[in-house]
Length: 270
Image (cartoon, rainbow, N blue to C red; front, side):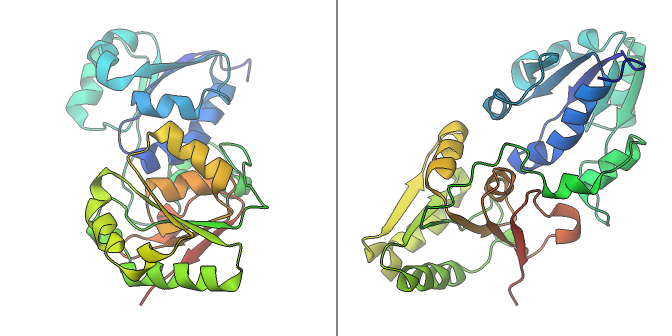
């Protein structure tokens, strides 16, 4: 911690899994700069930080405790991705020391995390891009290729045929190779289509769906030797666990949204 800056901070972070994960670098940096950090985010994200968080980082459920934010922000600095002027003014009226709105969806380069550092006037270290922020959990001996063919948005998804072809090529490379396909709540159409395809007939192919975030993370750590997916929360998670991660960018800008991690490869599909 920087003893010259012993203020207290409230950090408000809504959004999806990918949004949360890309915020971790400045969250950890804030813990170095403030004597107390209160993070308000979705409760399902809390377990991702349990083994990593500094003692002075306190986790709060944004959905259940969000109504008390104005009271909590009194006499504290605030980082918020809810950046409309009425909300910023309300926090100031409630006694927040300084409110810093952060841009949730920059459209232009540099990378999203660099945008955050620049907004906060913090020096950006290049190693941020290559750090396994959730620990280097790669099971390097695993011969399983984990494929997550959805993303929650059809606009961001590559054709299922691409993933089917990659899966078949992986199985043909080595008799011990395996495939896991995973699906989120909004990926059921992808799941049904793949279950009706020839890839589902392969004995070395498994289908995972309905996993909690904690169970998904644990399974990635234990089983994934490689990962392939679209620009999505699970892809960011795999990359930040140090798993060799190939990510397809269809409609989003990889220069802004590339996952953070030591073994990330960007793919483009024409």
